[in-house]
Image 1 (cartoon, rainbow, N blue to C red):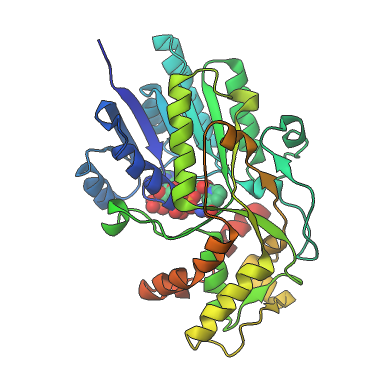
Image 2: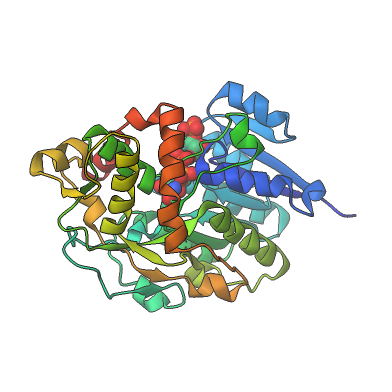
Length: 357
Ligand SMILES: NC(=O)c1ccc[n+]([C@@H]2O[C@H](COP(=O)([O-])OP(=O)(O)OC[C@H]3O[C@@H](n4cnc5c(N)ncnc54)[C@H](OP(=O)(O)O)[C@@H]3O)[C@@H](O)[C@H]2O)c1
């Protein structure tokens, strides 16, 4: 008897999670998937059900619900919060039960981020220290204080115990507006984090801003292509249990890098085009501005540098690179003006406060 693949997904109303869910719904094997999403908003849950997605209303901190959902799943996509260890622990507890009850080894695809690689450059230099997702020994030199790292190491430990096959995708700075039915219906968030946040802050201060001279670099990836990586990995892991997992299960999402200055300059040009400022030239944030927008943490001035070699080795083929990322800025500005989110300059501060707190 052929049984359906039971999939549980967190983050369905988000930028990455909505994109991944959409691709699962149009997957060639979609008819054999039984998809459940954890959603906080009841109205959005109803809308998702019209797409044949089962929903559980709740937060990732509703540990009993999360654990029970994972315990009835063959595959879990964890795409809500890369820093919430208790929530991930609830997923792992559920998957451990699944293993004990069925004798199968379920699959976890968790979302971390290349923020785990950051340094303290304050925009002063571009690092030459690249991490490869094939070089596990180097990844293991990252300290527990690095963002996301304490969650990633707990996941690897679970994978090494053997009751679950764990895979960690580390997206970099994802760019591009998410599109498709879940976004058109207002269910999922259209905007990424990094570039939109730089735009909102630049809009607020009426001029593009950089930390220090803006020489630091970050890896980048287009939203449709990071979504490809989730699906390539999902397909491969289901068909081939030897797909790298556990200690080896790190997959960077990277297809080139940009400097902070390059992005800021593209934003400055868009702001001039919109009449928001007279000069496209980025200026360095003052100490007061670093406090106001970034809770004093010069996160935008960090380096994160990597090569997605394992991701490519499993068949991922990204094509959009730095030029596409820089060219995506005007459409992002238009969309943020169009939906009013251009005025939300302090979202990043809230996230950074969590790190400093
Ligand atoms: N975008 C990037 O460039 C990028 C790069 C690397 C890593 N990441 C990481 O990937 C994850 C997803 O990013 P994203 O860009 O998709 O963010 P997003 O658009 O803000 O989506 C976050 C999703 O997670 C849900 N969520 C957050 N906290 C939750 C909670 N306590 N309980 C239940 N659901 C919760 C949100 O639900 P609501 O709609 O109810 O808020 C939303 O569906 C984040 O951890 C982010 O840091 C993102």
